[in-house]
Amino acid sequence: MRHWGRRGALAWLLWPASLAFGLVVFIRRFLYRIRVLGSKHPGVPVIVVGNLTAGGSGKTPLVLRIVELLREHGWKPGIVSRGHGGSVAAKGEAPREANIASDPSEVGDEPILLARRSGCPVWVAPERGAACRALREQHPECDVIVTDDGLQHYALARDIEICVVDGRGFGNGFLMPAGPLREPRSRLSSVDAVVTHGSAEVKGYKMQLQGESLVRITDAHDVRPAKSFAGQTVHAVAGIGDPKRFFLDLARFGIKPVPHPFPDHHPFRAGDLDFGDDAPVVMTEKDAVKWRRLAEPNHWVFPVSASLDPAFERWLLEKLSGSEAA
Image (cartoon, rainbow, N blue to C red; front, top):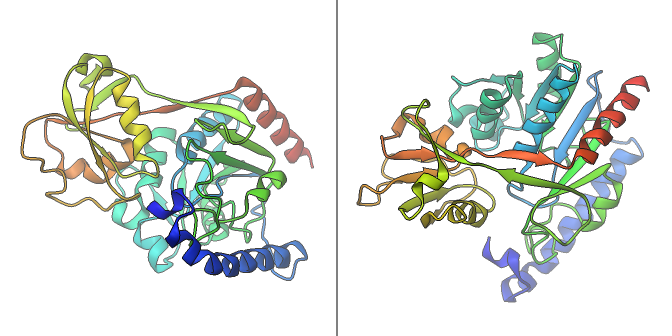
């Protein structure tokens, strides 16, 4: 929302509502802390990757790198997600496994991307504990669970909390609905690690999102260097939390992007990408998941991967080993 970026008239008008929201947040967390409200642990280490702001902040690429790291060191990770944008989350349906054949309108876009890129079992449910139980029942070999989002889902007990902060920082610094914050910025002091990319507002382990190639959506074998599109005008489509970041990524290769920002988790439909010409259309992986069945030969996807500070990776492995021993 536009008013989340500054403390304008609308933000101040909504500020009293944000105070009420903050009070609810405080009381809820306090009740979990004194165990009036209960948290359940799935019996294997749980790593929560979340953020303080509404919308995407780079959590999904970080989850992918974390599970890749864990597999490299002998762990057998599983992934749990709310499945935002899908009917499972919207209607509170029973846990469901997400895979490359799943319908994004049911399980959401990110879980399908996670399943395709990670090769790990991915389960979706608004109640993360239920998703963890279903995952472990169907995949008993799983010995660690990574959740994509869920920092504020205190009903799920966790061993490690990681908070991601992107280039937008904390917007105007107000809690919802006056600002983008789901919890006060002070919450950072209680997480185990902060991972930042493109943000100078806070200190933390650095992450970079890197991509070098474009892949034709109708033919995954057609992979071309992004720099081969230099000088071309392309329609850049991004239904993510920070579309500007995607447009700038393309521009650094000399591509001339025509920006087409959509709301985060936008449910694309036929006609949404009809721009009246034959110029290439380039989109994020998350958007391509929903557009794949409607794709045309001039539609391309720009995959990115997270590159992490080696110190973070060492810290995480040591922390996880200590959690397992406990």
